[in-house]
Length: 112
Length: 111
Image (cartoon, rainbow over the protein chains, first blue to last red):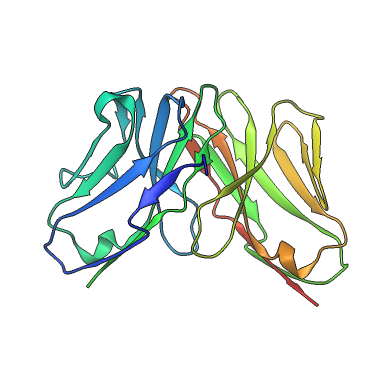
């Protein structure tokens, strides 16, 4: 399977804990995006990378969130001191160039 | 501000009952409009890209069309397996291609 992969698919954590998600993009795609989606809403942009450079971060991305893409390959999204409001589906997408983006299956986060 | 609005929020059809979903957009400069299908608990699946007014794309029972202000996703003789949420999105003009999504239309097709 050469699509975008994300791990884990589901994560349940207690409030205050840290969590980290991983995204492996389609190989040779130099752009990688993170989105967050809550029930009944469309995905909302969080941040994006071109190769290893993080070029934009949304105001939704508080100081508790950090993302990396070492060597321009996979990416990680870390949430520190999770809050119940962080419960959502976290989606990763990659794009070769242009604007078409291909999404992974997502990581469902539940903060209890 | 770039904005995408979809209607209706939910649509229930009988199998074989054709209908259309609407996506209205406001963006500084259109660099494409994308349609995605999303099944429950999964990531969006890419369907179509439309780039200019008058353009049409088809895939099985789906046809997407584009005008200067909106796009339609026409569903002809739908089947229960077409049940999903359909999302449309446009790239934000100035900001690295991030997508601005509508809230989606949840389609349910009953046999």
